[in-house]
Image (spheres, rainbow, N blue to C red):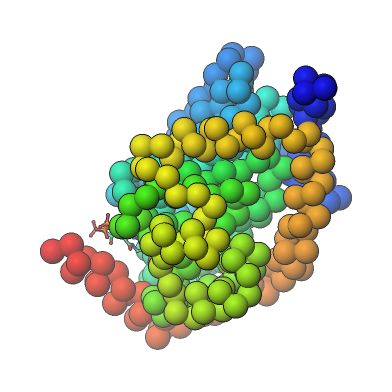
Length: 301
Ligand SMILES: CCCCC/C=C\CCCC/C=C/C(=O)SCCNC(=O)CCNC(=O)[C@H](O)C(C)(C)COP(=O)(O)OP(=O)(O)OC[C@H]1O[C@@H](n2cnc3c(N)ncnc32)[C@H](O)[C@@H]1OP(=O)(O)O
């Protein structure tokens, strides 16, 4: 029976939950995925390593110093995720960092500072696109959070199905946008509400709270806190448990839970871009970002 279930689980619905939801999917070249037992691809900011025998792909962020989500990162992530989404050998994806102490510092502030309106529009569309790919992935997504994870870094973790955080009080996680004088957009907020519930999200987003591992566990922002050297192995063990569920049943259940949030973003996508461009290009907001960057540099020296 267990073998039968595993076989059934191998039958996966094609494409992300987005295409399962009846929207047109896009096709990308599968150049680097052959029939070897392991397929790796490294680009400058992201390394993808798919183990065909286990069905687990590890997506490692490798953009020192802080894995900030600039245009290169966003593009490489989008390409990597598209390829994995179409790869039948891949059943689960683990997001983690190769940079010590930082999972991701979130959106690259330099992409939101001193640029043209056209740049802001392209940048925001890419951020939306990455979230859509992560949140609507038909694969099992686990975040192995081995470092600090503010704002956009937290959003990537929130887009996963399961979150494991390293037990280090310096590795804080949360949507801290308000502390920078900017605002977490509605789909960041929705991702938080869907994870921790309305009341906690309400306080969390207004204060821009960054949670310690113990507090993140307490409010359900992460599902497990484990010693730092066990984060990746725990993620792999956990993935095996998720693999026990037949893919088609899990995917339909996931889609049922996430579709309203995804649909809301798709319906408001262009307005959201307009809001972002209008907001981020304000002098007062540019000033806040400038001061925040100066504060980060001062903290160092
Ligand atoms: C009403 C309508 C609303 C519509 C929408 C409107 C607004 C848009 C909202 C947009 C949502 C934004 C999401 C984001 O993700 S914003 C980014 C938030 N991120 C942060 O606040 C993190 C800041 N960084 C840190 O806290 C720390 O760097 C750290 C991640 C904890 C790591 O600490 P540490 O190892 O000590 O490294 P350093 O602080 O020394 O940093 C090393 C260098 O990296 C630079 N850095 C850090 N973070 C960023 C970043 N996010 N972007 C760009 N650069 C970053 C830092 O300045 C250092 O640079 P240096 O070596 O040149 O000094």
